[in-house]
Length: 224
Ligand code: SAH
Image (tube, rainbow, N blue to C red; front, side):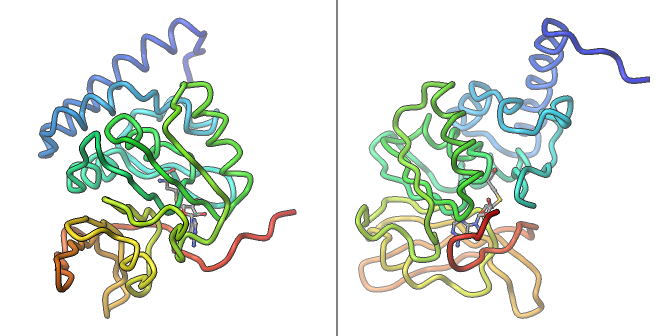
Protein backbone atom coordinates (compact mmCIF):
# COMPACT_ATOMS: atom_id res chain seq x y z
CA UNK A 1 0.00 0.00 0.00
CA UNK A 2 1.41 3.44 -0.85
CA UNK A 3 2.60 5.35 2.17
CA UNK A 4 0.91 8.73 2.52
CA UNK A 5 3.39 11.52 1.85
CA UNK A 6 2.88 14.58 3.94
CA UNK A 7 5.11 17.57 3.20
CA UNK A 8 7.84 16.80 5.72
CA UNK A 9 8.08 13.09 4.94
CA UNK A 10 8.26 13.87 1.24
CA UNK A 11 11.09 16.35 1.76
CA UNK A 12 13.11 13.88 3.83
CA UNK A 13 12.49 11.11 1.25
CA UNK A 14 13.50 13.39 -1.62
CA UNK A 15 16.72 14.40 0.11
CA UNK A 16 17.59 10.77 0.78
CA UNK A 17 16.77 9.64 -2.77
CA UNK A 18 18.65 12.58 -4.20
CA UNK A 19 21.86 11.64 -2.36
CA UNK A 20 21.48 8.05 -3.57
CA UNK A 21 20.99 9.24 -7.14
CA UNK A 22 24.06 11.49 -7.05
CA UNK A 23 26.16 8.61 -5.68
CA UNK A 24 24.87 6.32 -8.40
CA UNK A 25 25.68 8.89 -11.13
CA UNK A 26 29.18 9.11 -9.70
CA UNK A 27 29.53 5.34 -9.74
CA UNK A 28 28.37 5.30 -13.35
CA UNK A 29 31.28 7.56 -14.28
CA UNK A 30 30.02 11.13 -13.96
CA UNK A 31 32.88 12.68 -12.01
CA UNK A 32 32.71 16.40 -12.77
CA UNK A 33 31.97 17.84 -9.35
CA UNK A 34 30.44 21.02 -10.83
CA UNK A 35 27.90 18.89 -12.73
CA UNK A 36 27.14 16.69 -9.72
CA UNK A 37 26.75 19.70 -7.45
CA UNK A 38 24.40 21.42 -9.95
CA UNK A 39 22.30 18.24 -9.97
CA UNK A 40 22.30 18.24 -6.21
CA UNK A 41 21.11 21.84 -6.09
CA UNK A 42 18.25 21.59 -8.60
CA UNK A 43 15.11 19.96 -7.11
CA UNK A 44 13.95 17.51 -9.84
CA UNK A 45 10.65 17.03 -7.99
CA UNK A 46 9.68 20.53 -9.21
CA UNK A 47 10.02 19.38 -12.83
CA UNK A 48 8.03 16.12 -12.85
CA UNK A 49 4.21 15.83 -12.84
CA UNK A 50 2.68 15.45 -9.34
CA UNK A 51 1.66 11.85 -9.97
CA UNK A 52 5.32 10.93 -10.48
CA UNK A 53 6.67 12.96 -7.57
CA UNK A 54 7.85 9.87 -5.73
CA UNK A 55 9.94 8.84 -8.73
CA UNK A 56 11.62 12.22 -9.08
CA UNK A 57 15.01 10.80 -8.01
CA UNK A 58 14.78 7.44 -9.75
CA UNK A 59 17.30 7.30 -12.60
CA UNK A 60 14.69 7.19 -15.36
CA UNK A 61 12.95 9.43 -17.85
CA UNK A 62 9.31 10.25 -17.01
CA UNK A 63 6.31 11.45 -19.03
CA UNK A 64 5.53 15.19 -18.96
CA UNK A 65 2.73 17.13 -20.69
CA UNK A 66 2.23 17.24 -24.48
CA UNK A 67 3.38 13.61 -24.84
CA UNK A 68 7.03 14.55 -24.13
CA UNK A 69 9.49 13.28 -21.52
CA UNK A 70 11.85 14.65 -18.91
CA UNK A 71 15.24 13.08 -19.60
CA UNK A 72 16.86 10.45 -17.42
CA UNK A 73 19.20 12.02 -14.81
CA UNK A 74 22.16 9.91 -15.98
CA UNK A 75 21.75 11.21 -19.54
CA UNK A 76 21.37 14.80 -18.29
CA UNK A 77 24.56 14.46 -16.22
CA UNK A 78 26.43 12.71 -19.03
CA UNK A 79 25.50 15.27 -21.71
CA UNK A 80 26.26 18.17 -19.38
CA UNK A 81 29.67 16.75 -18.49
CA UNK A 82 30.55 16.15 -22.15
CA UNK A 83 29.67 19.77 -23.00
CA UNK A 84 32.56 20.98 -20.78
CA UNK A 85 30.73 24.14 -19.81
CA UNK A 86 32.32 26.98 -17.90
CA UNK A 87 30.88 30.16 -16.46
CA UNK A 88 31.76 32.22 -19.54
CA UNK A 89 29.70 30.02 -21.89
CA UNK A 90 26.67 31.13 -23.84
CA UNK A 91 24.61 27.98 -24.34
CA UNK A 92 21.73 27.15 -26.69
CA UNK A 93 19.36 24.36 -25.68
CA UNK A 94 16.85 22.96 -28.18
CA UNK A 95 13.90 21.23 -26.47
CA UNK A 96 13.18 22.93 -23.12
CA UNK A 97 10.55 20.33 -22.13
CA UNK A 98 10.22 20.43 -18.34
CA UNK A 99 13.17 22.81 -18.07
CA UNK A 100 15.19 20.41 -15.91
CA UNK A 101 18.22 20.25 -18.21
CA UNK A 102 17.95 24.04 -18.66
CA UNK A 103 18.10 24.55 -14.89
CA UNK A 104 21.22 22.37 -14.58
CA UNK A 105 22.90 24.31 -17.40
CA UNK A 106 21.96 27.63 -15.81
CA UNK A 107 24.03 26.76 -12.73
CA UNK A 108 27.14 26.21 -14.85
CA UNK A 109 27.20 28.88 -17.54
CA UNK A 110 26.74 32.58 -18.15
CA UNK A 111 23.41 32.38 -19.98
CA UNK A 112 21.16 29.69 -21.42
CA UNK A 113 18.98 30.35 -24.46
CA UNK A 114 16.34 27.65 -24.64
CA UNK A 115 13.81 26.92 -27.37
CA UNK A 116 10.65 24.79 -27.14
CA UNK A 117 7.93 24.12 -29.78
CA UNK A 118 5.11 23.65 -27.20
CA UNK A 119 3.83 26.87 -25.62
CA UNK A 120 2.34 24.91 -22.65
CA UNK A 121 5.66 23.30 -21.79
CA UNK A 122 7.55 26.55 -22.10
CA UNK A 123 5.09 28.42 -19.88
CA UNK A 124 5.37 25.78 -17.13
CA UNK A 125 9.16 25.66 -17.43
CA UNK A 126 9.40 29.46 -17.13
CA UNK A 127 7.23 29.31 -14.01
CA UNK A 128 9.73 26.86 -12.47
CA UNK A 129 12.72 29.06 -13.39
CA UNK A 130 10.99 31.95 -11.64
CA UNK A 131 10.22 29.92 -8.50
CA UNK A 132 13.82 28.69 -8.32
CA UNK A 133 15.18 32.19 -9.08
CA UNK A 134 17.15 31.04 -12.11
CA UNK A 135 17.61 34.42 -13.75
CA UNK A 136 20.15 33.66 -16.49
CA UNK A 137 17.71 31.79 -18.75
CA UNK A 138 16.03 33.25 -21.84
CA UNK A 139 13.29 31.05 -23.28
CA UNK A 140 11.15 31.23 -26.43
CA UNK A 141 8.59 29.21 -28.36
CA UNK A 142 10.12 28.52 -31.75
CA UNK A 143 11.38 25.82 -34.04
CA UNK A 144 14.72 25.02 -32.47
CA UNK A 145 15.88 23.15 -35.57
CA UNK A 146 16.56 26.62 -36.91
CA UNK A 147 18.52 27.55 -33.79
CA UNK A 148 18.29 31.14 -32.56
CA UNK A 149 19.96 33.28 -35.21
CA UNK A 150 19.61 36.60 -33.32
CA UNK A 151 21.58 35.24 -30.35
CA UNK A 152 24.16 33.21 -32.31
CA UNK A 153 26.96 32.23 -32.20
CA UNK A 154 26.96 29.90 -29.21
CA UNK A 155 29.84 28.36 -27.27
CA UNK A 156 27.79 25.24 -26.65
CA UNK A 157 24.62 23.72 -28.13
CA UNK A 158 22.62 20.89 -26.60
CA UNK A 159 19.69 19.23 -28.37
CA UNK A 160 17.39 17.10 -26.23
CA UNK A 161 15.22 15.60 -29.01
CA UNK A 162 16.45 13.16 -31.65
CA UNK A 163 17.29 14.49 -35.11
CA UNK A 164 17.06 12.40 -38.30
CA UNK A 165 19.92 14.32 -39.82
CA UNK A 166 22.50 16.82 -38.65
CA UNK A 167 20.69 20.20 -38.28
CA UNK A 168 22.72 22.51 -40.56
CA UNK A 169 21.48 25.74 -38.94
CA UNK A 170 22.77 24.58 -35.57
CA UNK A 171 26.20 23.80 -37.01
CA UNK A 172 26.27 27.35 -38.47
CA UNK A 173 25.44 28.86 -35.08
CA UNK A 174 28.24 27.06 -33.21
CA UNK A 175 31.39 29.08 -32.49
CA UNK A 176 34.77 27.86 -33.66
CA UNK A 177 36.07 25.77 -30.77
CA UNK A 178 32.47 25.17 -29.68
CA UNK A 179 30.82 21.85 -28.80
CA UNK A 180 27.36 20.55 -29.68
CA UNK A 181 25.80 17.38 -28.27
CA UNK A 182 22.73 15.87 -29.88
CA UNK A 183 20.89 12.57 -30.23
CA UNK A 184 20.99 11.55 -33.91
CA UNK A 185 19.41 8.65 -35.78
CA UNK A 186 21.92 6.37 -37.49
CA UNK A 187 21.35 4.41 -40.71
CA UNK A 188 19.68 1.58 -38.80
CA UNK A 189 17.20 4.07 -37.33
CA UNK A 190 18.72 3.76 -33.84
CA UNK A 191 19.54 6.87 -31.87
CA UNK A 192 23.01 7.65 -30.65
CA UNK A 193 24.41 10.59 -28.79
CA UNK A 194 26.86 12.51 -30.98
CA UNK A 195 29.39 15.13 -29.92
CA UNK A 196 30.31 17.66 -32.61
CA UNK A 197 33.32 19.95 -32.20
CA UNK A 198 33.78 22.91 -34.52
CA UNK A 199 37.35 23.48 -35.64
CA UNK A 200 38.73 26.40 -37.66
CA UNK A 201 38.18 24.60 -40.98
CA UNK A 202 35.84 21.71 -40.28
CA UNK A 203 33.67 19.76 -37.83
CA UNK A 204 34.60 16.62 -35.93
CA UNK A 205 31.89 14.16 -34.87
CA UNK A 206 32.23 11.52 -32.18
CA UNK A 207 29.59 8.90 -31.37
CA UNK A 208 29.15 8.57 -27.60
CA UNK A 209 26.34 6.19 -26.62
CA UNK A 210 22.99 4.70 -27.64
CA UNK A 211 20.04 6.72 -26.32
CA UNK A 212 16.25 7.11 -26.61
CA UNK A 213 14.80 10.59 -26.99
CA UNK A 214 11.50 11.89 -28.35
CA UNK A 215 11.88 13.06 -31.96
CA UNK A 216 12.95 16.53 -33.01
CA UNK A 217 9.95 17.87 -34.95
CA UNK A 218 9.98 20.84 -37.33
CA UNK A 219 7.72 23.85 -36.74
CA UNK A 220 5.87 25.25 -33.71
CA UNK A 221 3.34 22.78 -32.22
CA UNK A 222 -0.36 23.43 -32.76
CA UNK A 223 -2.11 23.33 -29.38
CA UNK A 224 -5.79 23.41 -28.49
N1 SAH B 1 15.44 18.49 -21.67
C1 SAH B 1 14.04 18.21 -21.59
C2 SAH B 1 13.67 17.16 -22.60
C3 SAH B 1 12.29 17.30 -23.07
S1 SAH B 1 11.87 16.17 -24.36
C4 SAH B 1 13.69 17.71 -20.19
O1 SAH B 1 14.53 17.04 -19.58
O2 SAH B 1 12.58 17.97 -19.71
C5 SAH B 1 12.35 17.07 -25.78
C6 SAH B 1 11.65 18.36 -26.03
O3 SAH B 1 12.04 18.82 -27.32
C7 SAH B 1 10.12 18.23 -26.10
O4 SAH B 1 9.55 19.09 -25.16
C8 SAH B 1 9.78 18.64 -27.52
O5 SAH B 1 8.56 19.36 -27.63
C9 SAH B 1 10.96 19.51 -27.88
N2 SAH B 1 11.18 19.66 -29.33
C10 SAH B 1 11.10 18.73 -30.30
N3 SAH B 1 11.36 19.29 -31.49
C11 SAH B 1 11.61 20.61 -31.28
C12 SAH B 1 11.95 21.71 -32.11
N4 SAH B 1 12.07 21.60 -33.43
N5 SAH B 1 12.14 22.91 -31.53
C13 SAH B 1 12.01 23.08 -30.19
N6 SAH B 1 11.70 22.08 -29.35
C14 SAH B 1 11.51 20.85 -29.88
